[in-house]
Image (cartoon, rainbow, N blue to C red; front, top):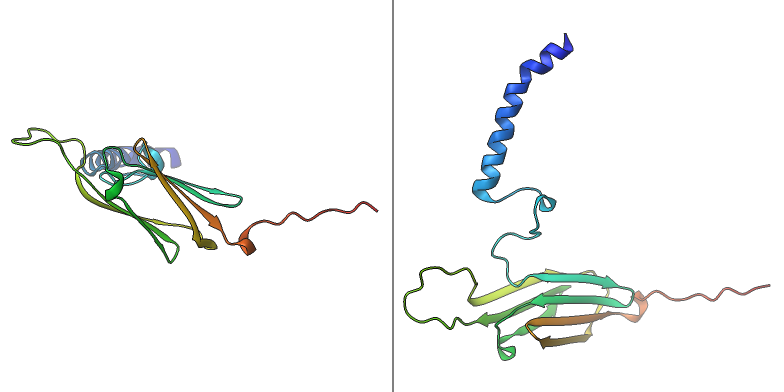
Length: 147
């Protein structure tokens, strides 16, 4: 009896499954792990954020941006990267797949970072930012005495 009930629902389930697939393709949504993107399409610049023992390291991939147009600020555990990427094309553009124009990216970071110990370096299209943890937030090595 249960098996028969299950098979009666199978066509309904298949319809919902197909509808979900179609909507995912139309709106390009889904679980973050369902595809290679971890942020919505159009988020720029893409970043990697890594927490280390003594701080946080951020890499922002910003090829084609002049170093002078990049502004980095840190306030309330949020790192803001602003800038502008100019396009070299003039005239009619028939297809544009590369982002150009102003951009802003705000990245939430863990608490306990020292706003006075931030370093930023831009090289070969990669903005590398390191922020050290406050001394009281860093792990402390406790020596073990042998008795």
